Image (cartoon, rainbow, N blue to C red):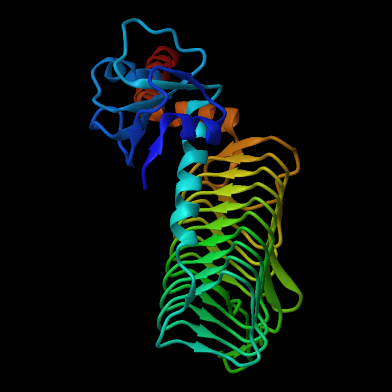
Length: 352
């Protein structure tokens, strides 16, 4: 697809500097872009490339003051990074819009309800009484179990599995290999030392505008629902256990594990490899550093914590500083012990 600078400017509300009719057909990084490509500049570290790049169109911030003439057509916006993200999203939507219809071989139950402009890829399975909204894209190898609901403009990438009874809202993107609604980890200890499985009869509810990375698992509730609220962004390789609730606009990085019945608040930011205990709450706005272990409830909103077990960041940094000094402290203690021994011996001789 080919677009002119003028057309792109309309999409991102940009001011044009240069040839408004120059066209581009693809995207490129500013340091590598060629003629006919569009690039963007948001990080000042890359500004030097602005004057040497071969890109035909470049999105830049309104605040950027040019040091030298630029050959490319410039599109000025308030936030170049956000504008570029919007543009990529529009481009992706245009490409996806071309995908429609049901490829074969695939299975779609006769009791399923399918909306308009839906795409179902080959080897996908759509179970009984499934409800699929408009503009939904279900890529090859996906599984949608019985009685699942999928809202408008939602995309399931290849190999996504959505178990029975789960409810997915609108504008959701779920990446390859993710499993929604697998059994929660519930086993009751028995007198003979074994374990009896506790049936997991709840479901998973995912609200609107959620994105979930590849190979993430979200377990169904034992009773009730595991809930992912509107605007949540989950990275790859995350485990969300049964009956967890993740609040609006929370962001969780890769390899985190959220234990059962934990309540994560709104606007929480969680770094990679964080683990939580079960049945705790994490306050709104919490910022949790990577590899932290959350063993108890975080009560204070907008707190920053780190470490294992996690504690306020300032206290953790002081502890780290002390740990770093332990070898020197040990040496000084040994010197003091030796000095004390000598003083004791001297005092003993004098008393004689």
